[in-house]
Length: 272
DNA sequence: AGTGCGACCCGAACGC
DNA sequence: TGCGTTCGGGTCGCAC
Image (tube, rainbow, N blue to C red; front, top):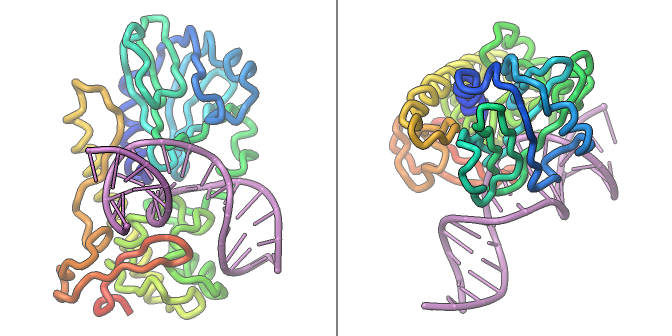
């Protein structure tokens, strides 16, 4: 389940492998992934070259001549690099074939990921991109900014951390970890949060994302032979999926709850 | 405007 | 064993 750290790892790995290669064909096996008109999608990509790969929030942005290919992996999207002769595997939905007879293959068991082509000057007209808030690693993420965004909200903090228009890039796993690190209850309403707690949330977000990115980078090195390009997150989780285990800080049993439909793990004793 | 929730998918986990 | 059911994850879009 890719979050910002996994997306960053995929970006760095693909940059080393596909930049400068000319696309000679695009095979669309499952078309609902693609939001752009399919003929237009193929016509723009064939003959084109990926010249850079950027990231905005959880979106991968592949740079082309005049367009960007925007790709969101959602939960299970992955990119594989394979030789073109290899048979198409289950769950491979979009295949970009380069002139050197290698493929970039988009693999997604849940078919939830999305791709779209936009003209470069229209990147920020794309809804998902336009709405992104500030990233945890950006110095513009201040306690004052967070306090201002949270202070009138009747929603629980868990929900607010998942809102990409406030903090860009936190997913369900890291939201739990951030709240644990900041010692803030996931149930606490935005309107009840203090400036001091915003400072803790800001620091925890940055710390956890930076750690996750470095872990993702470590993990990927074991993938060189199989070519599965994904940054699987490490099991350094203190609360997420730790239900029933003792809290590493106080020994209380980690609890699980649903908050606005999202599974949430927390320590009742540490998080107030 | 703010909030709540179903839809999109399908493999894994669970219940019988 | 084998079947059917439930769950989960990020985002969108619709309902209130």
